[in-house]
Length: 369
Ligand SMILES: C=C(C(=O)O)c1ccccc1
Image 1 (cartoon, rainbow, N blue to C red):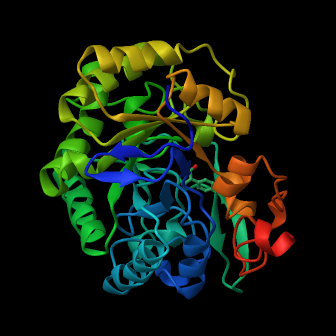
Image 2 (spheres, rainbow, N blue to C red):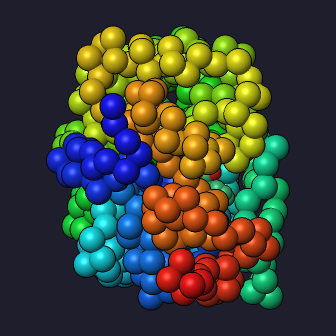
């Protein structure tokens, strides 16, 4: 029987424990370039078995929020090298989340003020974070997107490939493909955001096609043993919805089983919200993946506490558990879980934007003693 605190092999790397830091957007990288404050933040959390970085856009077109770090400028790759080097020096392992937001963006963030792109021209009932002309940050309604022409898709696949290569050059141990939370790949998967009538829309096989082509582009570039994917079958985040998600996501994981990926990261329920917002067979999803020969580490997320995570791993229902908010306020979460120590409360007012306050100034157990 495995324990949450046991090491685990994830693709070509071995992790010290089965606790992952989930991707967390913090909006603290002006110019889309990782800075020294980001280095400190990730270094502080290096005791996680695996850190998965905040969503990291593969291009400016894939950028949907102000001041998130990208992986498309040379200076950004240099900045990420400092992050990965610091995490590795502290004994940690780190993956970068490759992100294209699709329609969850704003014209002020897009190249030449263009409309964001999406599978179909359907505006999201959602908001994004922009910087006003006076320099203040603010949440704004997402802009009206335009539908991608089928001829543009190979270019976006190339963007993913290039970003995966840049990730390896920047020292990351793996990449996580962001296919969750109503962003571009998820927009293709869901029937309510994908009204295409070509090979990328309509049937389930067509709607999972883009996700599979992204996986293929990245696996062919850096190897399946450094590639993971994050999915969120029933989340309503960013106005995502599908009338019948179970067959879509079962079909997706059955296809993914052929690629021998390093990990599958599953958000159970509504992201950051109720775990039972819609009926979904989570065990059935994993069984569908394993039945087709899928061997990837099965990582689960959303609302887990220490006892739930221990049970999920000891029962074999999951191989790893990822934590978001708890890692914001507890850089030494692993030690706190091991000792069943009290946890710091996170300050929601400093989740997005700002500086060290609520980012790198949470105390560790040693400091609290
Ligand atoms: C990358 C995000 C996600 O996956 O939901 C995100 C973006 C903005 C705020 C919170 C989360």
